[in-house]
Length: 308
Image 1: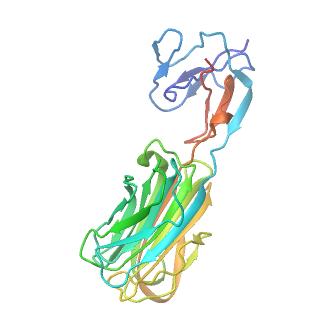
Image 2: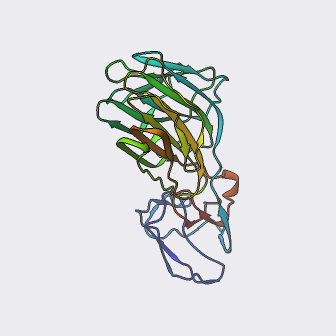
Image 3: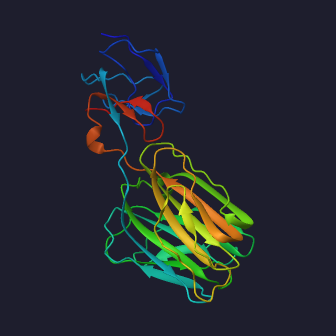
């Protein structure tokens, strides 16, 4: 039997012992966080090491690499206002599926962050928001583990009435423990008169993440050409009789490494840009009992699940 590796600061609720395989490269595995291990036999809280006591030993000679699921955009819809409004509502074309997530990418023609509500009473969390002075702002929101059925999403203007534009997405395979748990990395920036959007970069902590970007433009309506490999999901949203927000576009991209969404216009105008990446679930079926798991859901780590 191989020399076990002592695991310290291991992930909560997971066992971190290497046994009955070739000797590990290191005799100590440091996971960089406080351990809260649980021994199913004795019920004791184990610190630093978790020895199996139920007769099953993980096979460290045959690790399994687990990649997170790939998020899928199930449906999307867009809307833009006519003139200055206090809110803007957009309906999904089909019923939402229970357990999926909703991402709202929006822009508003004032400097105050909006809020989001819907007819299914889902709870939304602001992921990222940035204002270009009092002229306009853009924001991204998420609601995870949503209810099933027909749904209309409303962007509620947080400041003075102004023009609003929005893109709503229903997405599968996001982490759904909480809204906050689904969010990985964010970035935002603003600039004055420029033909290219200010620089933003998002760097995911895991593979198979999904990123969204919001591009807002002030002063004059123009066509925003979305770049940085992001797809333009909204098309060109130019509110009629604009107030503050003159043009808007929403983009998305599946990423496993750093990405830099960008936009360009023909004539220099002030910008507001926000971007975010979202984490996806790890396949439950892949977490086989008795196997050593290389789990990249946060950072690559060596763990295995309790097979009891």
